[in-house]
Image (cartoon, rainbow, N blue to C red):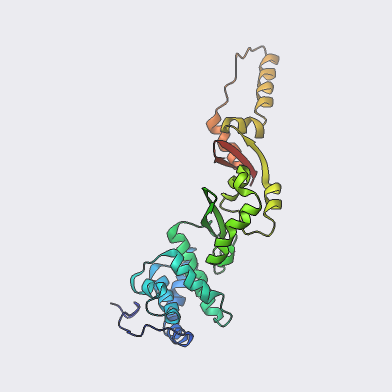
Amino acid sequence: MSEREPGTTHNNRSGSPERMARTAGRYENWIAEGISAAREASSEIDLMTARLIAHTLGRATGRTSALANFGRTGDGDYEALRDEYLALYSDPTSPPLIREWIDWFGTHLVQREQIGSGRRFMNEHQAPQLDRLLVRADLALGEQHLSVHVPASTPRDAIDQLAGTLRELGVDGDEAMQAFLSLPDVNALTDDLTAAFSASYVDTFDRLEDAVHGLMEVDEWEKDINEYAHERGFFVEGVTPDYEVLIERVRDAYDLVEWKGAVHAFYT
């Protein structure tokens, strides 16, 4: 075991903010180096830096905590880890440096689990922020399951309450709204979800080919081609659209969600 690797010999199972502060001082330079390397590479922190942060946080949550275990092994359940670090994150007594480390650590986990929207809403030159990173959350709406996205700073109880809020909005019976909520850049906890949906929703189609005709001027283009040929003395028996190409063009302009046998289109 290297000097930099979190130790495994301490037998005290209790944790405290004071112990976390002392450990933070011990590992601060190494963690700073890991964060600097991530900034320079425009990437997330590496596993060793993540383990050092988890080890530090684990001094506050106790030796048997998920964070302490991640510090020792580099592995752990995402939801259990999230519950622990968000408790520290929302604690007003947690130092700003600890909150910044949690932003980096949480973003590392989201990337590892491949459940996030990416840092599309962040300044790439600044530290990541959990409240600006959307992550997938699986909800049960009656007998059906729906994957939505919420800020990575959202605690478990707020996610648990979200299913009830969506039922109150009638989402369990609105397939277009369900498709909208599946988009990775839609925050299901936004203040006015109905208004956000109305501003984004375009139309629903039976097939992708129907979406091409509904969202692009394909029929008008076919008419123009026939007129162009006729003016020059050519007879065009028929024009066959290349739907594979046209569908990709539609996807460049709209978000298309195939959901429950239909295609729902939204402004990007």
